[in-house]
Length: 68
Image: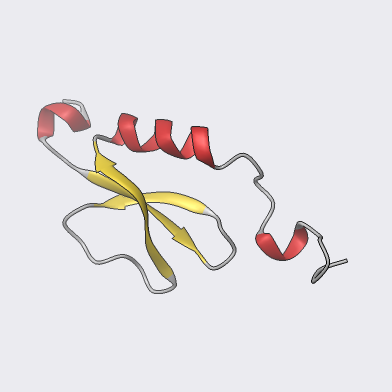
């Protein structure tokens, strides 16, 4: 049985380092994580993460004026 057949729903979450994951839609997000995208099947959520999380480095390692 796949996730879609079982009816399990997920949602996209993100942490303070802008790292994305998926989490069960019917559970509270883990501490340090917040909603960041759609909810849906595992496949739909993972597709969204793949399309939107283009730099896998944590925010603190990406550089820029505040992080040389």
